Length: 615
Ligand code: G6P
Image (cartoon, rainbow, N blue to C red):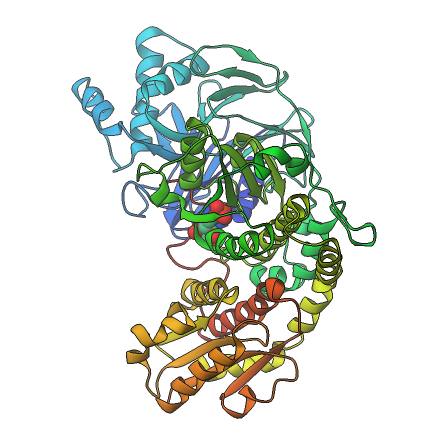
């Protein structure tokens, strides 16, 4: 997956596109490039590396002039990350420049046909094939660019968000999407194109989100003309009024986005509650659930499909749905589910969880569930994202933009939404008493303050990070509701510090991981007072007697574990079902500090991307 940006208007396109690419680097950062038309010729500048490297190269090559331009930040799919494979790609005649986020699956077959017609290729990419296919259509039948793009895309199989322009007609950009996001910012006689709205939010609040299978011809001096790629039907575009602010997307004084986002969690969770949880009235309002209550109440089971951190939120949800609403739950890796011929029926409800709302595997799982008649509910963060549009109903997490590649506030707000759903359904089904429901709501309301308290352990966590930072391996253990937190804690450490970490159910330790324990091995144990506390304390003793180093997460005031562990980190007391919302916090901070101490790129860890729009 990649980030794309485009501009056409009166400003210097270079400044807009470059700044936009920096905002989109979370989508990929192994190479970057830009194409500008300077009034005489098409100039391309591209390089392996980050957007800052691109800037250095463009300054050196003097490629910065022009009022129309497109840019790309890449996460390699076809072809290794190098200068040649970077986008934009140019057609053989040198007329057309294209940027592309996605994969053209049948590129090899198209390439062979084009080669037979004399085309040559310089890169290993599918994108270079596509731009030449467009050129071939344009030249052979004398089509305008928009029509040529449409004909070419009808021959392409795969996923794409593209922007292409013709140096002979430098007053228009043609865009299209299928499976990868694309937004058009509508300004005053200027247009912006981007994978999400962050590159243009400082210039305009008006945006058109292309739907899958749509393309647009964006020409100065008139409204964008949007149509269906496959049947040519013209679409009257809906212009969204954007509510996010630039300040929300920038770092607000924090050293990294990840740290900012960790500290935003109390506010983010309050935003998740807003308008939904009326604790004093004893009410949870969620339109997406209320409007389809029967679907949930009559469900044979809930299937949760997600990837990465969102999958961990799904595991927490399994505990709370089964515990409180007594609905059987299965949690599936979307990537496995989509390919394993699962049994799905009309009485199943799927909950698809996704921060970005764009993850290709989760989209495919949704499609499969829908084809089999299941009702699909989305829990997404990005408003207007593909998953939020594809699902039958849903609830946004309202965490605000999450830029750090390692997910933090998206995770806790996902758990919050899912917990509210479980409580609401438990009440509707009568599996939880009215008085317990009220107790849960009151406790839920106190969670943001308790997270604030958990964050106050930060200085102490710095010491723990110092203690752990030189380890090569580590083990994270938890039971019950905190088993998924152990998985998530281990994932956070792996993702940003590259230290190998494994999450395990504490009681399973004796079936394998215990063999790894020696004086070199730090073991992070979640040992909060609610939920199998004594059993986890026994596990800690077992680690101690094998000389493992113990870092324990305990409930405030716990003295028992303090006497055994090398370090303890305290979190406030809460109901067992809500402990993940607190125990997650110190594990996020721990990974963050270790990665910073090791000099790693916290916000953009190697090989990862924020939004995985390829399978
Ligand atoms: C990528 C990100 C993870 C995220 C996962 C699922 O791997 O780096 O942080 O958890 O995708 O993404 P989603 O947007 O569907 O939650």
